[in-house]
Length: 95
Image 1 (cartoon, one colour):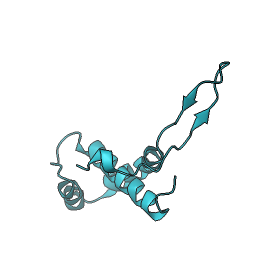
Image 2 (cartoon, rainbow, N blue to C red):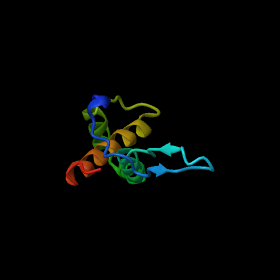
Image 3 (tube, rainbow, N blue to C red):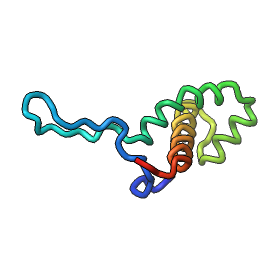
């Protein structure tokens, strides 16, 4: 599993400054990495569901997972973050 502390998260996806009445509220929002992964998870699940069993096993094994009940969700999440990381790298890590 990746070293989460050293992953470029792309910065905030939906930062918010100001707030309800006080003006002191500040919320950095979710990370761009989480946003990108969330956008990819449906496609990842679809790809996994349509994959032949041997390809599915290969995708899971490559990521250190054993093919058993519940692994499809884990695999989709891992693949979604792999895609999100690639998207952040492709944009040069800009936040």
